[in-house]
Image 1 (tube, rainbow, N blue to C red):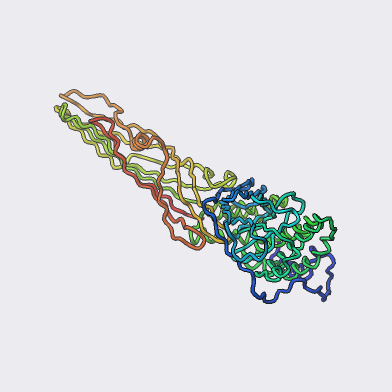
Image 2 (cartoon, helix red, strand yellow):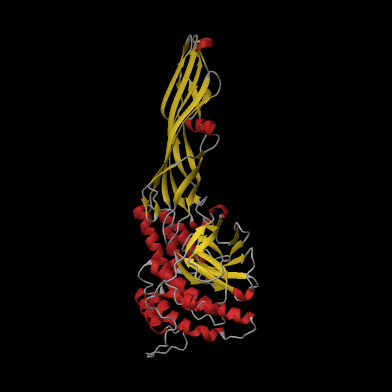
Length: 541
């Protein structure tokens, strides 16, 4: 889609938002009174959690979703259920019970709270936090809250849940206290933060009040109560983010998240999904812009651990939206494969020694070097879960170099050794990463494992004679690759050191090196030594 046309379309949508607010018409200059005063908040609520780190639980959750449970010292059980396709990458989630939430302005002191990290984590599909307090809170007296940094807000209840259940769209902390929503009017006016935080907090307070009224047998029209807040959220938050979507990847991501969250909330309350086309259009423009930024970081700063998770996240979003043949997907795939390209250099020096001078005055030594250069390139089609084992096999020539053959034996004339040529193979590579936060940065490649397919050439000794009698040529020696396999037990290269600067986006990967020196004593008189270095250079295309 033409970017200028798209930008113009966004401006029209932001001005009228006809996809989201059907009542809006061109030329409508009026606006309903804002239900939430977005002026300065006097004495905003500030809370400080005291964490019970001894009862913290950490678990990695990916695209398939999962469940993580933590139990506080008092026996309160917190369970976070993350649905499939909610997270855009593998994520380490930590749940830490809170022993005390200083500054909480309501409740009778029996509040139960859990801290959720990483702070700022956003879910494409809301997770559900259930709380089973050690001391039960009556169903009609539950006040649900959340906090981000030190800012308190009201949390979104799962309206049809039997127990305490909170819809979690982002981290960092949530809890429940005992009380009535009718008694927290003063606290509702002291909720600070951004316009979005203040409006959505009040909407969630209304939902909780409606839930308490329902449990008392009273009826409410929740949709009519929330309509003015949806209108304000549209004007104050959704429209400005749509307008800013093309400015940067971060702005585009924020627009997609805001529109999607807004539409999802309306659908839960019985409205039709009126934002699907807009989300699709935003995704078609924002995803390539984000991938352009990732590719530039990869080429210019050697940040290699972010681009595949970013591609995977957008690819899954396209799939979830039913967008299968977008040109943007093809472009992003090429960028990933051009970024994740490396050159491998493998250099090896070996020496075989047989020293029987104390037995028969004989001595034999054979030293040899060899090298392998191979291309290491990612295939996106093979990289379904992560970058491991998704690099295409490649080959390169190997040969005997710098041969040094010495042999001494009474009455014998040493011969000469043959040379060899063969082919070595790069078979596979695993890049083990500390997952990045695509919004905040961090992470990097933490370990590497490379597998080679090495030949096993033999070296023939010819022209040797003892006491004037010539010996037949014999393949008595092994080439350097075979010596490596003998000493290491396989063709893997491990124990890498990664070289690159630490940046805001994470740890750079310019080169990685693995060095070794192994002396293998085969017997009291025989040994094989190999000394080598492998170098992996990031060479984006």
